[in-house]
Amino acid sequence: MKKIIAVDGPAGAGKSTVCKIVAAKLNYTYIDTGAMYRAVGWKFLQTGENFSEELLQKIVNKIEIKLDAQAKVFVDNVEVTKSIRTPEVSKLASDVSKFGFVRKKLTELQRKMAESGKVIMDGRDIGTQVLPNADLKIFLTASLEERARRRFEELKLKNPAVELEKIQQEIFLRDKQDSEREIAPLKQADDAIFIDTTDLNIEQVAEKILELACNGK
Ligand code: DC
Image (cartoon, rainbow, N blue to C red; front, side, top):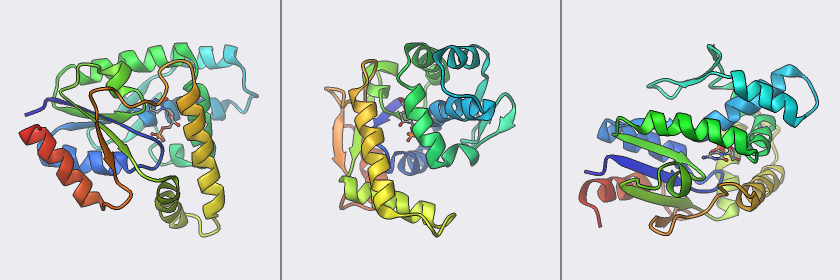
């Protein structure tokens, strides 16, 4: 059995939904690293200040981020699980993730969280930077149109006024920024298994990963 599973891929590829299913089936801990970058973005937003690297550094020095066993997210002991899911925080999470000092702090935390094994961790740089020795690496993607459609369906439940084109554009720009940044960009690890989920449903994707985790290649 693979003890450490790394799942990377662009926004809206279904990483977190699939990882939660796989984690539950294997009795593993799911670690959502995107939530940690969102936590930093959220904390910045609370200041109401304009963006500055100096203020970001101050925030990152002090911030305490916790993920519990149910994948609830806490920032300085305030639960932010839902409030970090807005488009505004998505953008800010991507913006703050460019900075080396942000990545250093979160990468260290992520490695610590994976120390005990039996974890499935998702993000952008897990297979390439955070856990390069992971037992199984997956790169999950889907067409931009399909990823936007999925995100649209999800957001529409909370806000019926959301627009598909706007979501598609936001995802496109965020992926571009995440792939083109200098430090630890979104990238498939050489030894990762590529899965295109455009024509697959959640159960089929989870099944594929479970098979790879249990039986290997
Ligand atoms: O997975 P997500 O959409 O919740 O992630 C939000 C942002 O956080 C993403 O646009 C880029 C950043 N991120 C990152 O740089 N590295 C990771 N391992 C995970 C997320």
